[in-house]
Image (cartoon, rainbow, N blue to C red):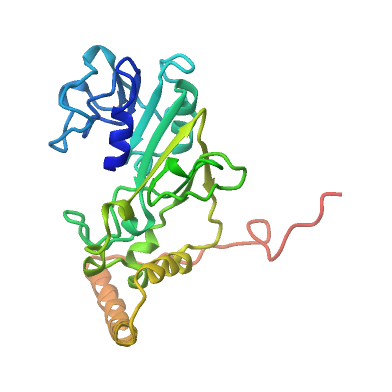
Length: 295
């Protein structure tokens, strides 16, 4: 969690009621309540906690539930002075519902998600040949409400989104990004990123607007390539090296492709496999273009 955000939350009045959403792996000790899919007894899987030395929550204020189940959380409207959700929204299947419930049960909140550059970092420790953390479902973009640039922490945008409310946008992290070397923040680049460039923190009051940007027949590769290039402008030598690498990869694929196909066919024969005949398809099954208009 960004230190600036931790300090701001710890400065709240001592009687402030705070809900930590998804805090099982590394609990925020100042929270008075926690909601998570995992049990109280096994908390702290990451080996640390933060937000002060003393836990303010306990087994009696730890709610174990699927908080993406589209069922209202077991709290009253505006029950909490603040709700926080740190590096969790990018993990879950329905972050929009989570944001809606956070807005309902708390008067104010703080959320924190990885930056785009963090999600594009190649081979994070323990993650293997992936961009960012392999279990993340979403790219996230957080932006502060109009007139409240101080609520944007780290890499979050102080420029308000359309509508002017504090907002977070989620975009599906497509599998294809992992295989595109042109959008990688390489380890040698990643060491240049300060903590504030790796995380986006957003404070909000009242509610946070959560939306999904749909990708239908399109990808983010050009946009992501631009983000990496803006932060890490390539020198002439680097551009030449990348061009050489691309040509070598294309040549290797051209040579290896036919060999793989022949080897695959031979292995299929050895195991007694067979390619099924083409299906019989008529115009009732599929036809060029649209059907005849109904009217």
